[in-house]
Image (tube, rainbow, N blue to C red; front, side):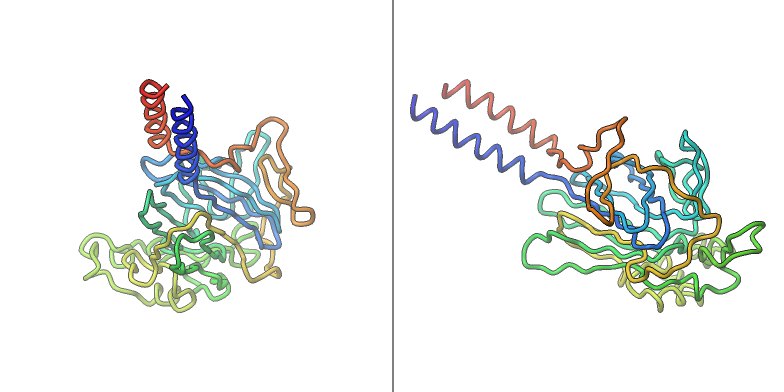
Length: 315
């Protein structure tokens, strides 16, 4: 009996460490802009939605979202949003169907995008920051909790491209589109719609779709970000990390507020306040799922079946 008990105790230890090693990745999203933004998330095909698909984030605040191994998708920032009590409204940039929660709707261009496919087991994560759909906010992505001795690269576009955006690509905010400053910079594809700029038609391969005058402007300002569809060589990075910091406006607290700025409603999900660092929770919903790491379902099933078989044989 003592031998069986020792074996059972050892089995439980193996079970614990196996489940612990299957913990999820964390995306820590920080708003370093001097105005509120509304991050949005979109899961790729076959990936479950994150804890939230759209939320508001005040200046200086950060939020943590968890994901499962193998998750793929996009994260971006929206500006100049105005939503009613039911979450219906619109954003000046990065809008996703006129709702606070994007619920499977992607960002309306032009929008700076963080894209990632998380690895499973020993496979690497693939991640990038893309301006293929244009640009609206500076963004920096930094891997944390890296496995092994291999260093992982930060990537992003930290330069304010709105200040140097060519006139023909500019999106101007304000009443009637005639007042205020540049709030986003279109891609040449969106602005002109030609196959050459969109890498479509006869240009739908890396041999015929080459950098253009406009993509070169983006690439010179942000050499590690995607500037056009086939800009893979210097824009896609690999890593194996437990957490990714995604920071909007990483190096500037002096940027002007977007036009049509409105004060945000009270936060409804777990965030960290810039002054106290304490969590704020909505009374109507729990945010514990945003800080707990879910187990890998296949691993859990396998270990559970193994536990049953062990008990039937040894006890």
